[in-house]
Length: 72
Image (cartoon, rainbow, N blue to C red; front, side, top):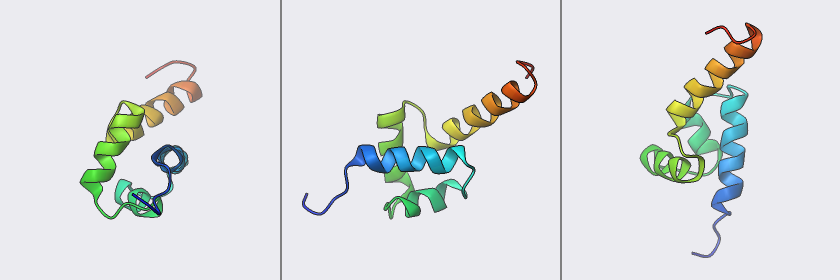
């Protein structure tokens, strides 16, 4: 598939955007070049091991836990 950006690079960008809370998941998907939210979610889960929404919740919990010194 000529002309495609490496999925790993796109996932790294998506992870960075989600970590920085830079928009909702659909906005992140579009920002890294996906036109389909379901396809983005599928590729994200294959590369990260969590769906984008699970990853976002995980990030928030870890940030909260860090801020509260481990309290959830």
